[in-house]
Image 1 (cartoon, rainbow, N blue to C red):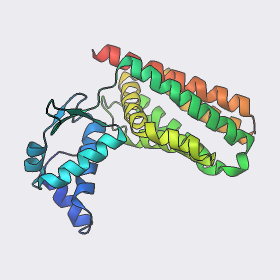
Image 2: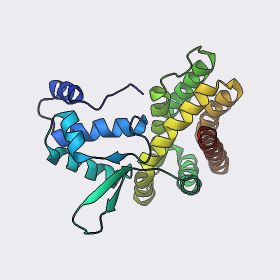
Image 3: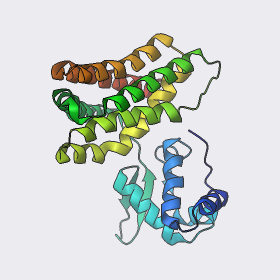
Image 4: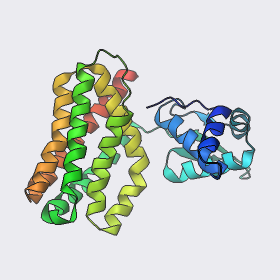
Length: 251
């Protein structure tokens, strides 16, 4: 992901692009990118006063942005004893929570793949194929590259757009709502998985990961609900193992 430092220049650049954008929206975007890129690591305490000074803005837009981050699940709020003030920390997901999250993903996205295959006229198959092939191509490029720490923003975006397209195509507002509640944590883990896979340079695993999106697409295209759900569940299990292995090697 492109580096985006927590500093006043980031705010000024955003205002130059859109002078009418709310400061809280700009601050939210800066902090969100910092969390997703691990510039703000898991467990880091967010100090409103310090962030306001670094960004050269008042405390109000910083507080609004942090409240939004709490709603999205990327920041957790911890009330002080007096109940008047709170401490804020970048979320740190435990191994048990990762496993629970991927169980939820299998339930939601496995059913989404099933529904999409059963009613494949409701999904843009051309776009789904494009996203699957772009993801596969980018992962292959990581394996062939000599770069030790490649920028994985693009592959992660292709990954998230592929899965989101599937869920939204179901037209089931409850399924979509459940996915939205876990979206930011899924995005965070998508970036971490892509980073881990790309830096280890295991071409076999990179090709396997990319081929899984292709398998899901083909099952949906061919109208095979059970095969689509099975392909999705295998893919999510693979990603879950990669996330847990990454954390184990990093500890």
